[in-house]
Amino acid sequence: MKKKYALVTGGSRGIGKAIVLKLAKDLQYHVLINYQSNEQAALETLQMVEKEGGSAEIIKFNVASFEDTQAALNNWKQANEGAVMEVIVNNAGITRDGLFMWMQPNDWKSVIDTSLNGFYNVTNFFIQDMLRNKYGRIINMVSVSGVKGTAGQTNYSAAKGALVAATKALAQEVAKRKVTVNAVAPGFIKTDMTAALDERELIKIIPANRFGEAEEVADLVAFLASDKSGYITGEIININGGIYS
Image (cartoon, rainbow, N blue to C red; front, side, top):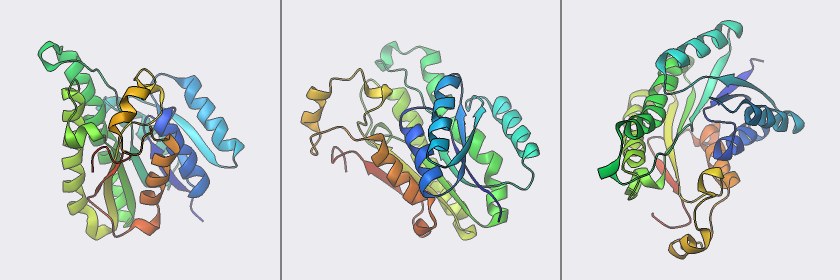
């Protein structure tokens, strides 16, 4: 039996980490945990996977860099001949929040490069193999910001909104080959990224009256990554406690 592989970008912390654990445990994937700088966090996630009886490895590259991504994935491919990559979760993303009128060029570019170009750099590398194998699950992590727009996040909303459109377009191109492409749009989820937010104030605008858990997002991603979801493609699924639906 061939080993099945899944790749989670930005998989060392937060939602990415929860997704790594879920794919390894529930779907028995050997998961590639991508990280850019925090090797310690990536290794801790790897240990958690192994502790739960799953298998994974860490892989360092910056999704925003085409050259870096190509080099790392080519090396991995050569070292794992015949490996079948079935699931890609494009989760890596950064925020550089601020009002648009004061936004610096690099705050715009780095956010777009990570979320949008990162999707291209990683997904384009594997897409031909998936089409050849006639199976694949591509899941793009977007955001409520990419669906409804969020003030102070014009760059992030632009990157995630573009990813929403890319999800819908690519889904139509590859559906015949049993490759699905979907996006998951979380609202306020308890992670390092939201730790500085005023939770008590914000839950007033959330009908469910709480922040979501990373594990809840991971459950949804695992379903979309499974073979049960074969007829769902081109969808943007909101998971936000009713804040925007």
